[in-house]
Image 1 (cartoon, helix red, strand yellow):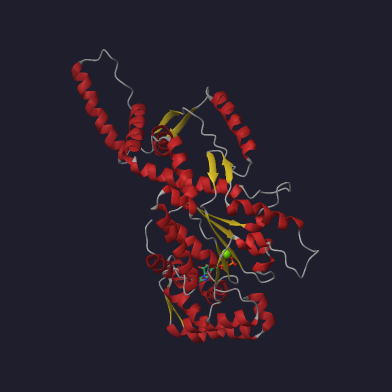
Image 2 (cartoon, rainbow, N blue to C red):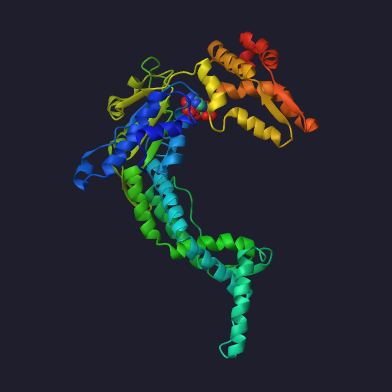
Length: 442
Ligand SMILES: Nc1ncnc2c1ncn2[C@@H]1O[C@H](COP(=O)(O)OP(=O)(O)OP(=O)(O)O)[C@@H](O)[C@H]1O
Ligand SMILES: [Mg+2]
């Protein structure tokens, strides 16, 4: 995608308020990759991505920025929690599995694209198969006039299948291949191989009884899968997907602070944390990882790490790893004003969500501007008094304000509720002022 950094930031602005630095840095990193891809292969090899470390307390938009970005750019993207990996040799997921996950993500992107490009072919295949089942073929010896009739019948049936008239009829389908894809991608490649041979055995075993009665409606989606596996060149897709993962892939490494070892609390730390950091090094630096679909080189994958770094600091990561994240951005904590904007200016804002939910009960919610200001103000206050949980505070606060209305909404069908600042204060003042209460309730 060849969006300029400005365009990327503009898109992000629709969903994430403030955090200008983070948006700019990431937008620039993405643009740099686009620029790189336009260069000669020789130069391309030389230019390494600059990985990013996002630092900011909880609920200020770290994950949100990355999530929105990946959605827009349609690049292979996965979000993983650094804390869920364990050092090789320990029980748990090894870090290389994140590369395999990225490959799978990339394959599904490429496959969807190819399916879109071959939509007509795939649809024809599906419809033909179903029509064949519904109308048994004519014997060779049939007369010319019979054949003409049959042709007419065929095209009439085709139309019926396409517009859904036949959806409730059942037909018998036989499957060429049992689609026993073991979806478990967590396995190391040797194990994956074992699994593959197992599924091959299963396939041959199942050959005999692979007929199934299904409705035409279900057949449409079942056959679509078969069609795309048959008509699309899967090897081709895998190659293309691996190439894209290598050159455009982004791995969002969340909670990286959780694998840092703070200098203060040495001794009480999990020994495998440092191991995970060491295992991460070669992957972030660039190495080859074997997947079921081929080898992926991680040199040009962009890593965006994020963490709150409350108990630890970036300098608590082992120095080699710190060095692999040269771009640092700090996200600001949210002010009262930012919270107000998050409520009012984001696409799919919480207020919109609540309104939409209650509209299902035919209840109309109206928020007075004063009330929204009050919600922002009290949320900010609660963040200050107890813990700063960023924009997530808005969820708990709004829940408190709307609890009763939400609970009894079905009895007020057709009515209108106006949320005033008085109501907000009435619901929240006591709670926010009381330190203990707010710890429990908000
Ligand atoms: N600056 C912001 N603008 C708009 N929405 C925000 C902002 N910051 C947070 N949010 C909202 O708050 C929620 C939590 O944000 P997010 O998941 O990005 O937090 P985070 O920074 O990744 O926190 P954590 O460190 O706990 O993972 C999301 O629903 C998100 O939409
Ligand atoms: Mg997060």
